[in-house]
Image (cartoon, rainbow, N blue to C red; front, top):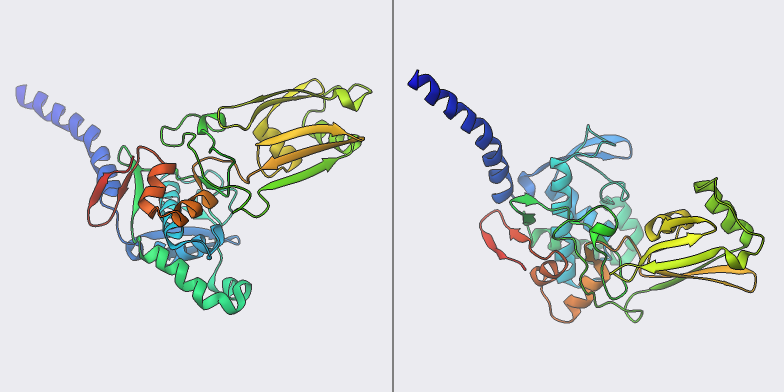
Length: 319
């Protein structure tokens, strides 16, 4: 009886511990890019590839190749980590593939032929730069509590990045932090979109058919509340309240850091920055690199509390 009890207890312990050990081995001892297999959904086709072959095309599609080398390295680590996190948690939209090349779902990607066509005479130089960023960080990933993080990134933010709690739920390493980019170093940092009353009304009714508009368009925009990141947390239009992120999507604004004004018969929405604002700001990373920060310092700033792990050894906690 005692032997049976011991064997049962041992079996229960192994059942609980082995999956954790497997996850720990996977995430604490990452492999090189050449040894990391990826199944990718690209242009509707399943592609079997490796991180070494796929990642440079992601870096090239997601960040300008003219950015500083340390910013490109930060992008390579963030993108690699993002792809591995998705490999472990495949999106429901494509259960047959680890990742896809749709930037809305996973990460954008461009093949060498497309890059050569787009870059023209700068192609050779740019290809060397993005490949150097991938190879110079070979296999390195960001982890939190032993698992690859959701390494979200975006183009640019005004003063602060967004806390993930405002959009997707609280994530301990996706919190609002300062970011240094300004209109001086970000093309199109501020964008303006105008709507006639009929256009705005049609857009809102397309999302909220029950919305009731008064006869005077000057009364349509009500209270606007900002969140801690300086973005619109909520805005009232007609008798309906929207989150800033929701209205950004409805009106196709570049960010949720916007102002709204009715003047001279039109509605004007002025947005600052580009993207959802969570995680690493790419233009902010480039400014940090210009100011002397290396890629590890950039990653520590935008993903506080994470660890950078390489195939050979673990570095100290980043921040």
